[in-house]
Image (tube, rainbow, N blue to C red):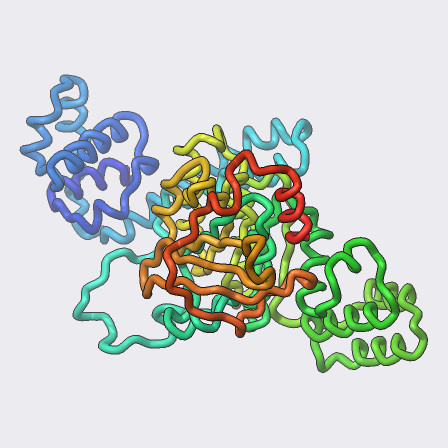
Length: 466
């Protein structure tokens, strides 16, 4: 005899009033009259913080047709008492996934010829997100008595920030499952700081994803090469490199991104030093690739970046690279979203980045714009989701141009502190070891100009950023 699991689930829920069973259910699992009954149970729970009994459900169910269906179909399904709750949940999930996927594929195949490549991937990703929203991904209930007495290395991973040795010595750096936000004015160097933090995580042995919305991948790559080789960025960007600089670039990139034990890489570089034939070296590296390091640094260049695309790449990298620990989105305010400049949308974007940090067990890092008063532009509420946030202030005209002040504006686990960091602007490099604590109150952002900055000063800030 076929068993209607939807009816059995509702009967089991009302008769047992098992809270753990209820938390594993989803409205997506029910259809037709069963959906209507489950929605009434869910509404009762939200209002009373308890699951109704059968008697209480009779009182809240006023619809005559629904009442008849409940008496003849639901109550009668209660005889299958030997079926385990976990089995019921698993079967409901399987049925939901099958039915949703069949329905999705029917419409997807009909539209396929009219879709562009990005739309093809986005539709698949949206389908996966819908499935994920209805399926539990991990346990949520923990009995304190069952937990370990002492913390272990796997409980909460902390990584040096790449900003300041002083900050890291006190607060340990940035943690897994954290959203870290860095506030700064337009043209102040937010992208440079973000890229430095990302490279620092990569150099610790992690795989890192850098999502670039405004900058082309070449600009990110050129800055990255400048940071690791200390060849001036503008020389790389304008392709004004001499032979010695090109050799430094080649050696740095081989050391940081390729397996140092691969004999091909060693031989190619030794030959390059002798011949200075950079074109031949480039061709050999492209067509006869030496082994890469296990950890990788990925640049995603997407001017129309959406939350779905970020989730898609994070899912892909986590599945392939076990040490994928950081994603940097440059920057949060311009992620594509409906009404993206509206404060509510900005808060939604921040909340979703935080959820992704939890979902993929990584540090999610993103700069954001601040206004003349040092507040977040578009939405102050984006900081609600942040675990750590900082305001970043470039030097004023009378200060040391190679020092940057950083003020902690929020920290969930740690001590609020202000510090400065050394900068090598020519090579777009943060010198994390050159850091000092500072005690003054946070700078007024107006010190560096209002939204109506004079153009000459704005030009100087942008040139320094380059």
